[in-house]
Length: 265
Image (cartoon, rainbow, N blue to C red; front, side):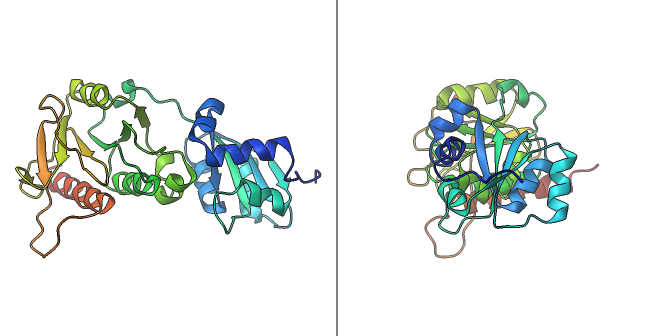
């Protein structure tokens, strides 16, 4: 086995930057995945896993080694202090992977029947949780608009449980440009708000659509009529003011899935 990489190694420093900086991830064209389960998910998906690094004091399971060997992925030892330096959590997993950042364009939405759109979501955990719900409900793509947190940050990847490896993720910093692109592709753009909106269980959600969810604090606010085609609300007979955006997104994505399952054929 090669000599383990130390905390002062340049490669360890580069990996540390990738776990902490959106700019570093996008300049390098790669991101970091932490933990044996998520690394295995990345290898089994269409993601391009460039290299895997492991705690030299940990013995990777034989099945894990075989999975990497089947894809000709190098397994590089790192000292425990090196892994701790790379990791984004206080209790680091013994293995991390460098993964190529996917390049996705608007052309990937041509055949999409359902898209989850996040607008100005600040919490990467909410971005990942929404992606997880959307993929589980059969959505085709995830779109991150405006100031939405990076979908390829460690927290978002963990919250998605690997879902972000399975669908195209499009990032567009200009929210209006993004929503117009979606509209041009024939998808009904449906936002959420508490007033002047149709209950989601009464709306027809069986056609091509984009579910548009706004920021945790302010929702979608005042939106131009050429950017949103309709509004949904979740019926709440109980005494509560609102739902967390990730919870609301999960409810509506599954209502969309329920209606589509009920369609003939």
